[in-house]
Amino acid sequence: MIVFPEQTEISMGQQAFTQVLSEQKESAPSIKSEMVQAVGNRIAQASGRSDYQWEVRLVDSQEQNAFCLPGGKIVVYEGILPVCQNEAGLAVVMSHEVAHVLARHGGERMSQQAAVNGAQQLVGVLTQNKEQVTRELWMKAYGVATNYGVLLPYSRKHEMEADHIGLMLMSQAGYDPSEAPKFWTRFASASAGAAKPPEFMSTHPADHRRASELEKLLPEALDIYRQAQQPIGIGRLIV
Image (cartoon, rainbow, N blue to C red; front, side):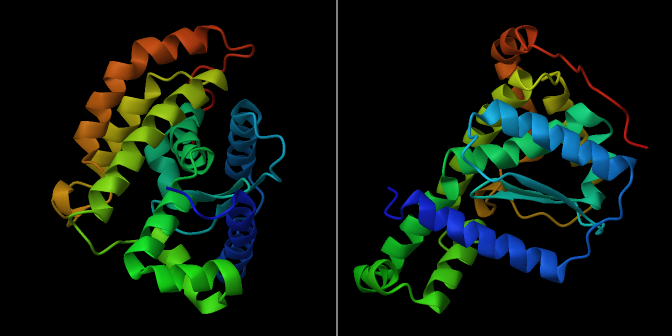
């Protein structure tokens, strides 16, 4: 269920991207920022969305995070780079985030949240463009939901779908998909000891489960990778 036009999502994505860049410090030009840009460009080209105004930014933060906003606005945090280890690992992260946008998961979540909040508020959003209401819906669509019975399992479904789409996307872009399960295994090790909620209370599947599911998808992904026009393999190491 998506009740918001894609152009509305793209417009809100641009606003959110501008806000993030005003609040976060961009990394200085370096080999790492060049690598992030290069991987982002290849994934953008493989996405088939030449109508998007793609932009890629590296943020000077040790947070292990990355996201893509509607319209092709990609933000990667420096903290995730050591876990990526190489360009293919970086492609795992970035293609997954781009997959959310290609599948319009944010629009689905926002529409579902609007329905949960009630038809009257939904009408207000669609007909009057109430800025505060849309901002709250946007944050809930891309943030933490509160209804474990409906919204969180639906979000986990989105994550698994984005894993699948992202795996095929990075393969098409020329990156070795075998790096995907390896990345999630590394991420699990890097997060060892950190307080994590049980999977049924989380918007994301458990890391070990993601690695296992991606292993099952490797034959399909490797077929796509072998047909890539410019195979990169794992690419350069991130040091």
